[in-house]
Image (cartoon, rainbow, N blue to C red; front, top):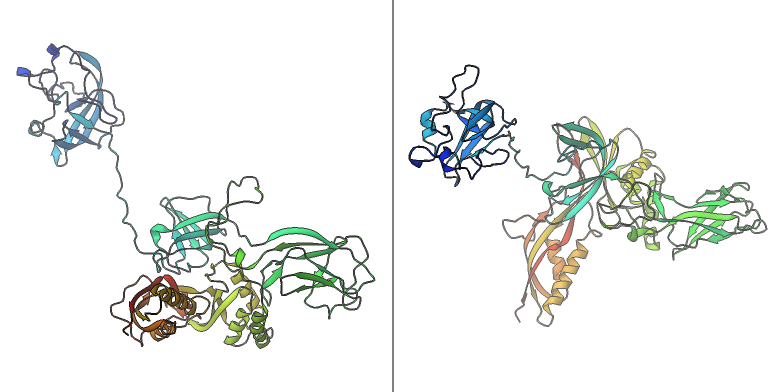
Length: 584
């Protein structure tokens, strides 16, 4: 027999033909007999030795009783699996050779391995193959094809990960289950870790805010929070006790503010020191005393930041000194800080032990500096709240005046026997807050300080849904069709894009039809489809067709969970337009 994996049972070639390699008449010798054609089972006469059906060419300690052996001839025309009933090593002298061999007593699935069974097998001495040392392989589990639903609070990883720490952050990224082809991600906090059956299961402090295709999802641990802004220090100038209201300009524009639990939702990164002592920032110098070491910050329309000190009556004057006024701060804010995933790859400095860095999920919560137009909107909101939150509308007004919040929707819900307040919020710039986002934490803390604590409060990111449309357009022959198509798509993305849509606001086919009809060059339109992105619609859309956008609601009475308010938004890939020339 010849080598097969770990096992070899063929004698060496090149020996004289008269040494017993053939049976009577030159017929091949079967593996169940010795060189003289005598059955191996019948040759055992010593009671201390086990009977043997076949010998393998050498000692093979890996074989144990109960194993499977697979016998086959060279062209694999005959294959026979057999059980090992007994195994032992014996010294043999046959075929003009001597040495140790492994003897096997075999059995079939139904019982003993008889002589008739052997005769039915075409397994000859020099050509048969034995595959041994079988291993039990457990069947793999059935694949889970259902997507991970939004609100899922546990993730089972694909292996055992012992280095995961409770309380640390984890970043996940994958294809959206409700928007095929759209890659998204979020950052979550690990609340619990369980190791069972060779797999690690992560319990999450907050549920997933989006649905993901399970096979595409990747989880990245070793996550550290980061905020936008480049740090720097500079000397602002020299103090002069003879001057009232001394003012200095920061050399770098766009002073960075970070989320904080304040009325406005921000805290400055600016620290001003006079003679090495840090002074305090106040909103206005009017209420400051003559000895108060304070200053006020003024930001001009062009982004220039000025630091203003007192006059000796409202705030202390600066002491005289040479370059004794210094500042340390971070600069940079707004859209530039809301970077996409995998765009941060360079470290300004490399601490010991860190080889590389990358952001697996996009940045969230950025907001540009407030303009005069923004101030006209936010000022009345702050007046309506006046530092206290009483009614449901106060929750929305306070949230809309909070830095980084662009949309808010409040709902009073009953969770079991208790009435709760649920506030769904969306960032100013397009995106979805991560459940563990610092802006959400700061907003919740700020609201708690100003409201009646009698009702439990939930602050959660909104749920973003996308829709798709298909329409036929008849255009004026005086216009180029590509221009009409581009204009209609741009108008649809503007009217039904992130900036224009409101939370829990339904979408009607009449709105879409009116938007398309209002584009120059469109004679008439026919809306064929209005459905969730990636879904099919049975019949054509009519002017009365409406796609609802859910408000916050309790979705499971037994294990109460709350779905946040939804936002319906258009996608460029979800607009399918067919153009034809209108009849004259």
